[in-house]
Image 1 (tube, rainbow, N blue to C red):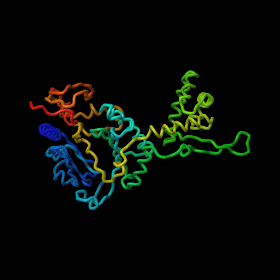
Image 2 (image 1 turned 90 degrees about the horizontal axis):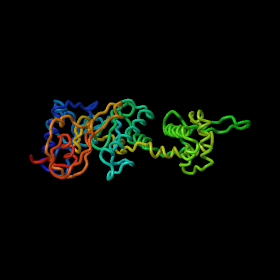
Image 3 (image 1 turned 90 degrees about the vertical axis):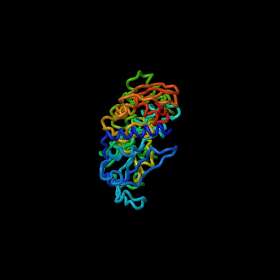
Image 4 (image 1 turned 60 degrees about the vertical axis):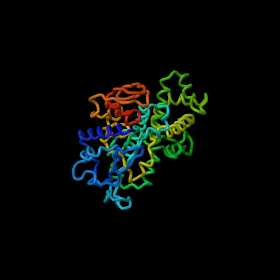
Length: 394
């Protein structure tokens, strides 16, 4: 980033903060604060080990942000007796939020070389919805804050009282569960003894739980398959079932009969209606572990001292706002529309495009050649922050 571009962005970030009223997180005075300024050169410098008083100086957070116009702003997940102490060992840890980070660049389903920025963010939102399903339905957390990071993904802050004292090992157990635990099919099915048909000894019945957890997810996928099979003509249904590995004509026919004749038992979780159903359930369980986990960034969740982006601040690598999202608005949230700062929406500026090609922004897909262009300021800030343009001289 050249000097003209850097000074332009710093000035406009400051203008944005002068128009904003940004509040800190709960217990802001117990947290460490840090920021990265718009420094010259290719490197970055983190200013950290600051207390709330160091940052605000007795005034407001917005005044600090307007004065310093930082490129990035952070606060700590941890709460301390002395958050401004220069060494972690001297801060006096008290508690920590449970923080989850989803980064599009690290998702298995994303190819950073082939996928556009918008496509990566959409894939990341799918992972976010899976994560929220775990946090709300498996763990029962209630105090959740969902945030678009302003860059490549999403953060979720959990502040339920029961999580604050968790140590790194306990947080790692949550990570392993959410990402997809190392468990077998037999670990999730419930086995009970039932009276045999005219036999003296009882038999065993295996049942998938229908009330949540990894077993519940597997049962949901099984019932989706059952519903699909019941709606298809018989031959198409058999072909669909034979798509599964090691499911031949005989097992497919048996599974089809189970789907059409034993629907209520399957809906109740009973997979022992036929061995073919058990075989398919096991295959679905393996796929569920592989596909339904939330690929969170493990070090963020296990680090009780982690610095995380401040909601309401601007992301220096995109010019987008680090946006808090209401829970019922997550499905409809479009970061390239809803996180565009209104500060930069009023006029056009001249930029020199250095990385030509398509740009997806604010609901549009635009194409720019190398050289000078007149663009909306919000788009110009986005392209300059992402290193695709520089501020033109005029």
